[in-house]
Amino acid sequence: MDATASGTPTIQYHNIPDQPITTIVVATPVPTFERRQRHCFGTSIPGEFPLAANPSIVLHVLTACNLDPQDLAKLEATCSFFRQPANFAPDFELSISELAALDMCQKRGIFKPMTAEQRQELKQRCGGSWKLVLKFLLAGEACFRREKSQAIAGPGHSIAVTSKGTVYSFGSNSSGQLGHGTTEEEWRPRQIRSLQGIRIVQAAAGAGRTMLISDAGKVYAFGKDSFGETEYGVQGSKLVTTPQLVESLKDIFVVQAAIGNFFTAVLSREGRVYTFSWGNDSKLGHQTEPNDVEPHPLLGALENVPVVQIAAGYCYLLALACQPNGMSVYSVGCGLGGKLGHGSRTDEKQPRLIEQFQLLNLQPMVVAAGAWHAAVVGQDGRVCTWGWGRYGCLGHGNEECESVPKVVEALSNVKAVHVATGDYTTFVVSKDGDVYSFGCGESASLGHSTATDGQVLVITALFPISYIT
Figure 1 (cartoon, rainbow, N blue to C red):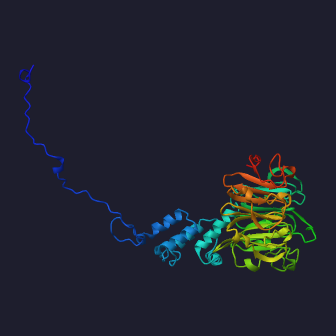
Figure 2: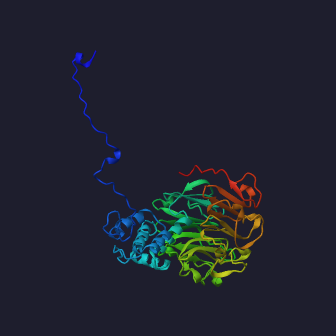
Figure 3: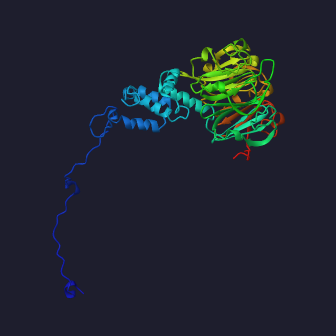
């Protein structure tokens, strides 16, 4: 059947000549994109971002990214925009990077309650820059777990502080150092009820005494009724079995305490170190009576240097200082066993810089003081120990004394973040969360079922205390 017979109309084809594709002309040319150089002081040319016209946005980005002080300093060195006055409150002369540092300081719990005058005083003490103040605050946060859960093991009793500021204590209580109003021992963690309504952020445990620090900078003490025995071991005549406010410290905002056998030291919010007792013969940089309970500032090299952490041993004190050129460690007190780290065993009556860290090219970040030995964790994760090496507590594979800090080679493949020291034991926490221990393994004190003194061993399992909620 054809189309005509079916009634379907005939389709007519028109003769359209073929055109080569190359002859088709596009009316709108395709634009070519050029790489544009972005300038801090950009113009109105499309594609450029004029930072100078949007400083508030830049400030917000710098603050929100939580850049560290070194990064802010690098921005200033790279571009003049970050060095020029930003014309923002509260100080119209501050640069963008300085304002960003100030904004990040204001986020810190220690910095918030400070008055404008106190902030300016801290700024000058740190070196005259808000970036240096931020460095000081960040270093302090890295050293101790302020406003975070923490556990403190003392000689015979222990203290646990929750992230909410509740305090538990357990162990020996012959001097009332558990704070429960009695001298009865506690074998399970028990909450200190008299502290209800007070948020505790830091604690220190010593022989027969305990000190607690609130988020308001107040210090509460209990146990032996003295901040330190005399050189002849005479104890206080009265026991304090519940936390009592230390009146002599009420005008000092305290952020940390450290208890030695013959003295107590506290660290203020501004980075000043104060000590009680054991000032006889200027052994701690000032002359006081052995039983003096008034705080005295630590003089000498640390008088105008901000300190971010303190650690007390049997008869010596370590101080981690934050300076514009980096972190450093000072020591003062008894030099027996070489624990002051100066290459000798002589006593130091005033704080003295431990110079060995510069030779090791190590930036100290955390310090720990055991009874007769000390340890430091560096920014690069290395661990250094020095002092009396009995039972291998220094981790160097022997029992020799080290009078200057020495890197623990057995931990060369471990990046450490924290260290703690006891009488003859040392514990190291790695970035991966592993715990390493070495020293005296008596009574399984290193956390291993079988241990040989001096070996560096990793604790593979930790068991939480279920009584604390």
